[in-house]
Image (cartoon, rainbow, N blue to C red; front, side):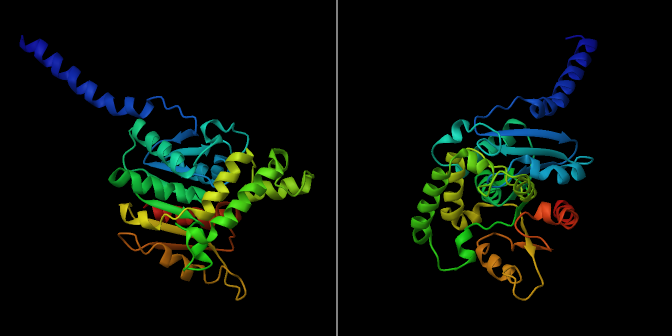
Amino acid sequence: MPARLSALFAALVLTLLAVAPAQAQTQTFRSDRITVETRGRGPDVVLIPGLASTAVVWTRLADRLDDDHTVHLVSVRGFGPLPAGANASGPLVGPVAQEVLRYVRTRGLRTPAIIGHSMGGLVALRVGADGGRSIGRIMVVDASPFFPALLNGATSARDVEPIARVAYQAVLFLGDDALQQGVWGADGASEAVMAGMGWQGGDRRVLAQGLYEVMTLDMRHRLDDVVGPVTVAYGWSRTEDSPRRDLERRLRPAFAGLRTPVRMEPIEGAEHMVMIDQPRRFEAAVLRFLR
């Protein structure tokens, strides 16, 4: 091959190698379980909402991060106005986590940070456990690998399953209209309150399954599979009679199975919807987490 052609060929190869990662980033992703909106440019952060919420709950945080991060806003089909799709039957957390992990791989994300709220925290832990070294750091927001253990450390999934089954049937009984209205009514005041809490309702089948899994799913046995560091951000109160005053004492043992000690980020003045209750304090905690 003539020297000039060899040089052109080498230049073409180098160009293709440089373009390949960008092509992976733009590869089309379609899912019948989740939707993903992407904003910004920089290190990747995946945001996963909780039960009955969509990516709308992350709007303020995304606005704060997207100047220097690529923010991937996940919504679960069947929550809010999204049709249920494949989530209309069967398990929810595991399949949704698999789709988030497939998204990470399809888009060529490199050790993205994952932030999940409530049920989304369970999804984030499952993504971390299944993804191994391909997943970076994880923040769970007001979530536990086994929620019932926050009330009683000796509780097992078998203990709470009968109660969870009743809750599942109750959600199905309420119907979609009531759930879209937050169960408490359709008046403007109720809608405003529920919107502030992040409640967006959804398909009763998906909500029922999500609630059932939040009550029964125990991820503690998978924590050793999570490679990256884990941070827990949670609502905290200094008021003596608040159940949130000593929440760290109940949360820390739940994460004892991690490879590295869990990092706690108490957000004073917040309840369950931490990102809505105390957005500035929460954003500061997220920035520390992402450093």
